[in-house]
Image (cartoon, rainbow, N blue to C red; front, side):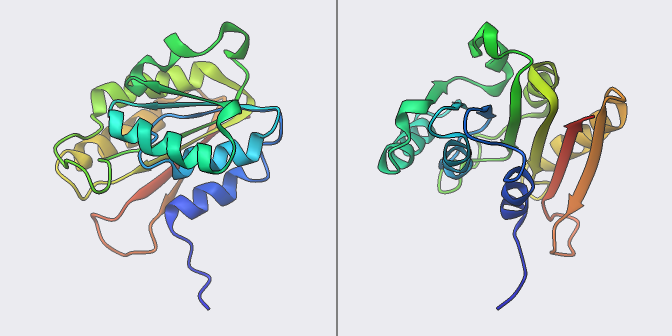
Amino acid sequence: MSDFLSLPQQAHKLLSPLIYNGDCVIDATCGNGYDCLFLARQVAPLGWVYGFDIQESAIIATQQRIEQAGLGANTQLIHAGHQFMRDHIATKNKGHIKAIMFNLGYLPGSDKKIITRSDTTLVALNSAVSLLAPSGIITILAYPGHEGGEQETIRIKNWCQQVDSTLDVKIIDSPQPKSTAPLLFVLQKN
């Protein structure tokens, strides 16, 4: 058996020891609901998960996955772009979010023309930093291999180089040695 972990699995492994029952977390891009389900399991039964997606089909798929796991009571799914996350977070939770996950690109099995875009992603990342708790963590999975993905990845790299010194930044390369392979950005408040 291989020790290979995909980048989404590595993001989960990084977050697992850092988020607990009772924490408040955000899935900035629900997609098919895997990250949202992971987060809901970590913070249940007393925590809270906010999930965002612009595609109704992603919200529906995530809702089904969460409800099948019996975790709907601590999850709020919001049909809106991640750039609006700050508008939807309860005031009491602002500055207290323990983890925020971004899994960029397009919804697998869906229209590949509906993608995350660097302009809205950068707005969302700035909001994410302002919402983060002390020692909170942001993971960003970027995919340069699809149309629009390379530009978004480059802009995220540039953004990471300019973030406040209170954030430690780490970039994890994909085990696939290709220029189009995904990258995992990890930012943690110190």
